[in-house]
Length: 342
Ligand SMILES: C[S@@+](CC[C@H](N)C(=O)[O-])C[C@H]1O[C@@H](n2cnc3c(N)ncnc32)[C@H](O)[C@@H]1O
Image 1 (cartoon, rainbow, N blue to C red):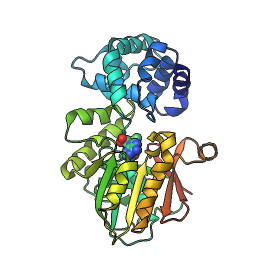
Image 2: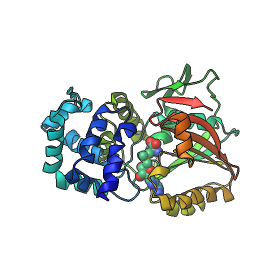
Image 3: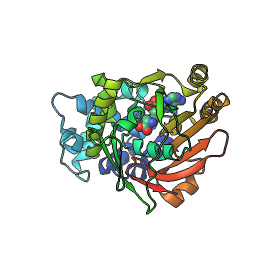
């Protein structure tokens, strides 16, 4: 187990391509059995790397007197660089001093990073649906429900400006193509979410966990998350708690049958334990028996090795229309900093 975990942390260089701090911390954890023992408490299907680093970040964000380790976290105003040799000692001492708290967080919490910019990918996916609407939008793995308010955000994809011009949330995403950005999307009516653990954005502790999941150098995401949180906390979208595999069949009975349903899931399937993924897919597709169904997904595809060899470490944006095979629409950066239509 510890050997597998050590291997997992040793991939930090690739996994945290835009976080030099987490790249360095990955190496520190990989080499220390005491730190790997904390990571070993994470639940099946969860990413131990993100969980451990978010748990540490969560404690730092909640500390009254910022401990020395905070000096390495740009999210806390830190300016020390990850190549500073003192980092190993500071990080290890902090983790061992707070071993109990960290173990409890790793055992209980989930990787629920709600990336506001992925709303841009949802727009591009919706634009591939040939329906005027209204459609019902159901997000599986909704976390705090940030994407359920996607059309309340101003969204600049390349040079194309979408959404309300006066929105306090402004998303910018690079469009890696000379093709025009598709802008026409179906009218979205009712919307709801499903999540193993819906995050209540009105609760400060929950908001802190969402902030803790953001990589410390990604200061723009903190600004976006804060602005989007305020918008969504006002709207209070309905998010049903539970495993999609068991919740979706119960929703099937209550979702409208007289209008198409769009199921959206982003960075969610990877968190479903591998042996449950077929059941997850089947539960989503079964919603198409009683109404037209479109599935828009932003996930690591099944042919991951080929995909990554061709496009680098990024997600595939796919659309699947009622029973038809999935159509690949775009390659999308993990944090939706760029979209490359295929
Ligand atoms: C990494 S987060 C992504 C959140 C959001 N989709 C986004 O892209 O910003 C994955 C979310 O999926 C949820 N999740 C994982 N497995 C699930 C399942 N079987 N059923 C419902 N939700 C699940 C987690 O609780 C978490 O909130």
